[in-house]
Length: 137
Image 1 (cartoon, rainbow, N blue to C red):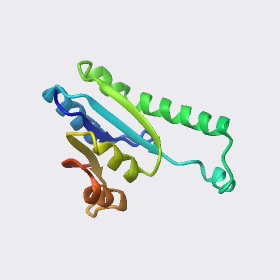
Image 2: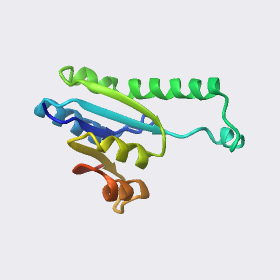
Image 3: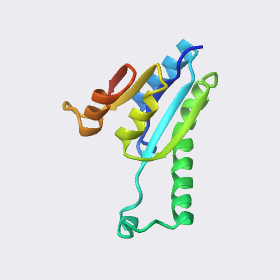
């Protein structure tokens, strides 16, 4: 079986070129697509640190993020119905979430904004455990 393709998705602002590239590649390879969306606690919640954020608040925020990712991927799920997609929402930094997901992937697809590598992309390129494809926005 073909190893999954992991794609990093900002559910608040999905980059069409990146997501379309990953879906199309998964379709052509017959691979499962693992869509990773990382999120952080709202800045107001950080005031409570190092105290624990109430579980019900964290759960409600996480439910919102899950729905955001599902909504963001809907157009591609409709365009590529044959692609099996696993939606993965993680309370982590984007770089940590993507590096973690790369451990079981055949390929990691990420986007690049601008001409320089940002800190997230740099960390992914240095620590990913599979090949990485960088798609310009």
